[in-house]
Length: 137
Image 1 (cartoon, helix red, strand yellow):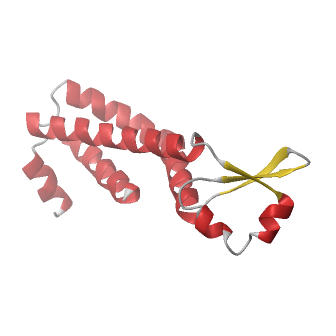
Image 2: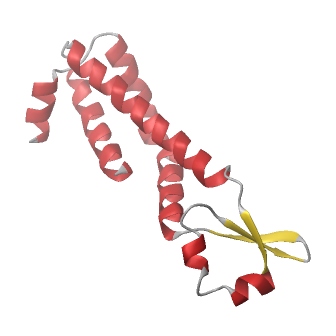
Image 3: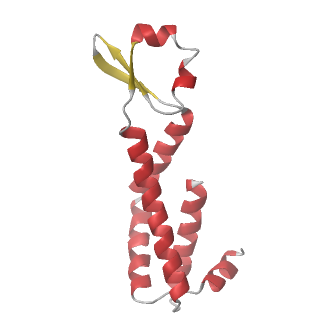
């Protein structure tokens, strides 16, 4: 979902460079920016701040076949001699975290997003109908 949202937002931001006025497209850009920011914040929060379960390496080894079922809700911290040495998380959580990091670390996208937001604030936008037509939607 995030990849689709990211792609659509990226394409809409490119279309906003057409510099046409429309309250509807400005509101759409603002809404999509808020959705993307919320998604990134929620993913990081949910992945990193939940109270994780702790297992020793020995326990993790014994529970290896059941461990994927334990990872659906939260990561598991694996310890050695009482100190965290690794984290196990579901593949879905891993993908979500990597996608969020990619979005947040893309300087070109961040620069384009800031410029597009500034354009929208100046009223340099296109209508939703025009944006959809340009994107072939």
